[in-house]
Length: 350
Ligand SMILES: NC(=O)C1=CN([C@@H]2O[C@H](COP(=O)(O)OP(=O)(O)OC[C@H]3O[C@@H](n4cnc5c(N)ncnc54)[C@H](O)[C@@H]3O)[C@@H](O)[C@H]2O)C=CC1
Ligand SMILES: NCC(=O)COP(=O)(O)O
Image (cartoon, rainbow, N blue to C red; front, side, top):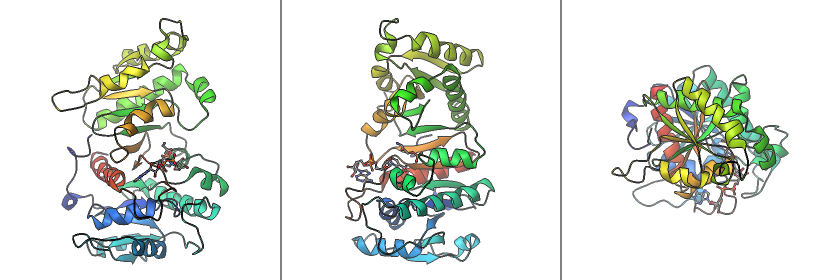
């Protein structure tokens, strides 16, 4: 499921649109989104957000002769997206943002607006009105300030989908990692690494990879402790918790192996070059930073966050709101573009 090998040309894009949520308006989401449209990479997408805010964002960006400022078209209803000329940005108005929001700042009003866009897109995805959801980044503190009691998209979407088990995957063309635990304190994450949670992660990852066309995905499982516990010298979670889950998964026909030392399993799995394919298709990681750092370190511009287990396709760039550069026309839209491409690919397979 690499974004280059499976990319569906825009001409054969799904007949339903992809919902593209605007993200936190004070972050880089809106500018990366305008850039993605300007580069012709967002055909088939409808932005769930605020047309006036996007128009203001577009005015702040510099365009070269080969990439002009896209027009912004506010839709009366979703069905009108097909009437919007190619290259323009169709916007389904979900929110009307206050003009005094400060770029690069946490603001509860921005968090509430971002949440409303996610909710609207997910609702449409659940009833099949859109083919997939791509989310621009939100700021978790702004979301919290708005009174939203979910840490991120993953948990919001899981809740909206009825509480189905989901997992976060971070993927680029060289490495795919799937997390057993996501947004929680590291102390809690260690306790949340149970045999059931590891087994469920293996089942979800296996099922998803089969959906991408891998007949027998090779799934490596990272240990929790240094050197995967070094035969119990540095912890026994590998023997007590992780190995039994792998054994159960194998008995179910899942090609899982490990637990492997976490400091070397990612380099073993990495598909560095076509002539150096990695030893595994997916690495299951025990906690957020164990699984995300290796993928992000290969380049923030390549990574895509995919929620596995939902009844619809959801992807996102791997980066956050980048308040430090928001509004300065420095944000790289590549990860958002990769997320859109991957959503297109997965929507065809879904
Ligand atoms: N999908 C989502 O909604 C995500 C949201 N977040 C949230 O975003 C907020 C900020 O998170 P941070 O840890 O600061 O990570 P960040 O990814 O926003 O920024 C980290 C560094 O990378 C740079 N950067 C990020 N994206 C870039 C891009 N497209 N082009 C150029 N430079 C880029 C930033 O300028 C910053 O120096 C937090 O609330 C976090 O939870 C983080 C990751 C994903
Ligand atoms: N580090 C990934 C991240 O925080 C994004 O989370 P989510 O909003 O996709 O749940």
